[in-house]
Image (tube, rainbow, N blue to C red; front, side, top):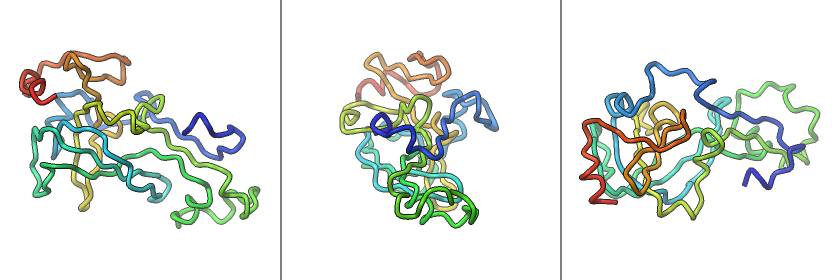
Length: 194
C-alpha cells in the first residue's frame, strides 16, 4: 500500500532499522529464543486492526501456528496467535482520534475535513519487509513473542519475526540475507513441519 500513497500526503514517516533501534541485548536468534516467552513457527493469516498507543502505532496481527517451539505462558497458541506489532499506515484523522497525546497545535496546517487524505506511517520493519499481504500466506516465519501487561508483542521489534526459506535458513535483517542457525532448535524437526 505504501507505494500507492502520494509522498505529499505523508505527514509522518518512521522507518525503524538496526542503526536507529536500541535493544537491551543483541537480537541474535539465540538471544531472541532465550528471552522470548513464546517461540513458534507460523504463517501469516491476517491483520485484524490498527491503533495508536501514544505516539506509537500498531497492527494487531494473526498468525496460524505450524509448530510451538517454546511457550512459558498460559496462552494457548497451538492453533494460532494474535499479537501487536509496530507498523501501520494510518490516516491522519484516525491517528488523531486514537491518540490523546497529540499536542493541540500539531497538524493545524491541515484542515480537519482533509485529514482523511493524509497518512502517518510507521514502517513494517526495514524496507517494509513485514508489510504482509495475501501473497505471504504460504511463507513460514519464526516468531519470538513476549507477554507484557496481558498483551503479546514481538521480542525486539521487527527482529521478532524472521522468515524461514526453503533451505530452513532464517532471514537476517542486518545482512539482508538468509543465514544458517546453530542453536538449540533442531532445524531437522522444523523442516518436517514446513
